[in-house]
Length: 307
Image (cartoon, rainbow, N blue to C red):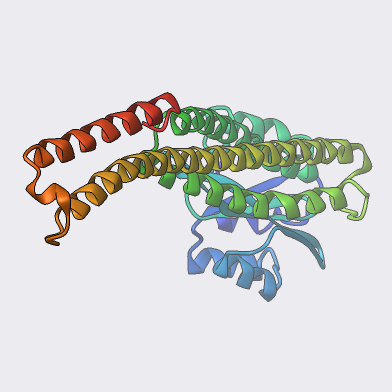
């Protein structure tokens, strides 16, 4: 892949004997002006390139096709968010606009694959880029699946605030990823239906392969969502069981002390007609009655596994 200046590409646009590859990372005003004047991108496309946050889509314009897809970027140890990648396919050129490093497009073999794809035409070059982006999903999702499995095991043993924060972070990440992957399937489904004259029929099979990868990713996302939902249900059930055990113990101890309090309350009254008030062994009898009843209730509740 030979790097040439933008000025040198002006005479090459529109030719059939070469394929041009443009990769703009956070394009400047001068680069956007070049895309508008020389590549002749529509002002709506330029607006999408600047504003970002586009839903995955494919739009046909005069002389080119605009495609917005999303890569997956790890924000921290357990949170993944989509990052927009804008692609334009012309007769002999492909333009990519991104903001920051994109997983799959920073690998050591990236330039080699681009060099090999350029020789096969612009549509195959486009396939190569989107294939690298989609293939970048798999290692991130594999890491997420491994983390979710470990988190599920920890939730079964004990729960802390950090694990719960991770669980909800995973759920948010899955929502973001599903929003990115779902519409992209329709994008590549259109490319496989021979709807664009810029994609040669012999290359539609490659876009079908990307479409199949997205279907596989969607199934994996559904599986991860079910695992997370199951982990949350297990956690809530565990908390409910712990609460039930605590309530049983409190009820048992409360019953014991209610009896003791009742006995103390009865013999704490100062009515003169109470015969036990002047009984020599009344105090010892009251204490013994409390101990006997409390011990009996204790062993009863212990046998019933309430304590």
